[in-house]
Amino acid sequence: MADKDILTMFLYGAIPTHIDERLPLKANASIAIVDATPLGALRSCLSVGLLEVFGPSKNKSVHMTANGRSKRTIIIGGAPLPDMLDEALIRLVVNGFYDEIRRDDLLGPIFHDAIQPEAWPRHLAKMCDFWSATLLRTSRYEGRPLPPHLAISGLGVAHFRRWLKLFRATVYRICPPEVAALFMDRALRIAHSFRLAVAFSRGETTMGVEPIAEKDL
Image (cartoon, rainbow, N blue to C red; front, side, top):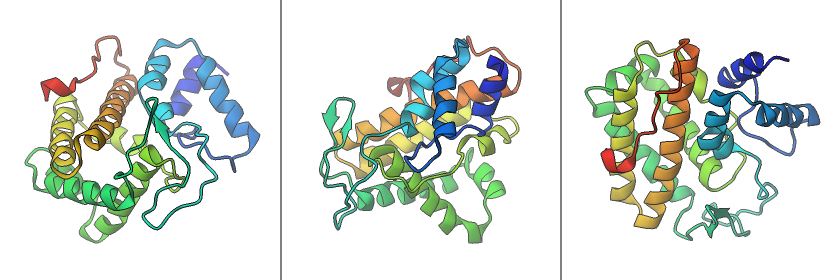
């Protein structure tokens, strides 16, 4: 399989972004092929984004406590996950963030066009699963977050910058500083991965796609 074909499969969701031990060996082998490709744009995506966020974890077979946290110690960035980060806090962040999104003049119309009023509870639940998989290493999220974003006409850096600004305001309002920093680290990686993918899907060069820095929000 050619590098371009592998990259296209990755960007459009044909290769899983969430690896679970229940997946057959063939799926894991595909990830190994993707990791090995020399294609620069894909290396950039992998180094800052989706496969790092959703990639294989040693904390798959977990016993959950009443607050939704694993009894095992979860290590992120070389440090144990703060005890105060649990499913309840993730729900507060997700609901608070999308309250801001829906009121925003730039992003609100995009989301209202894409999500019908009756579908919002399902979307919010999916986003809770997304962040639970990202930070608590649970296995609930099995979606493909990238393809819906590729379908948005005119999606550009201004939208990602506003998304990150609203997200930053939300997590620092709701969370202790060390937890807010974890959320922002992942959000910045995801935003950059998506921007690389958007540029690639449009046939544009990814060389000029610089990461958005938190200090510039």
